[in-house]
Length: 68
Image (cartoon, rainbow, N blue to C red; front, side, top):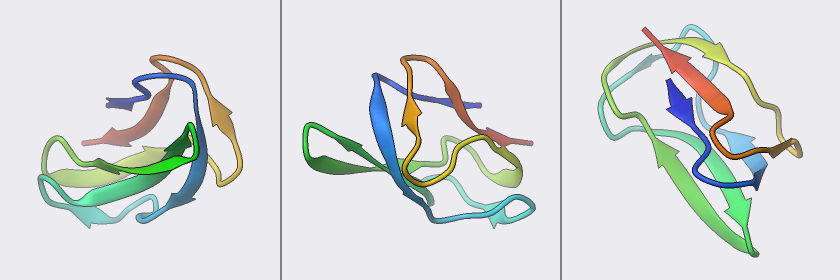
């Protein structure tokens, strides 16, 4: 699981459910304090669930992406 490190806004998703990802691949783009940050895959696998949508605000520790 990939969790939010702090309360941020989701700018966009780079992957979709069902996509295969490799370690270090970009998953999402988040915005905090007018700065964009890419969230990368901590492990290789398949995106089981993408739990956010562009424009959504997320809270600390909210699950953003599930990889299996």
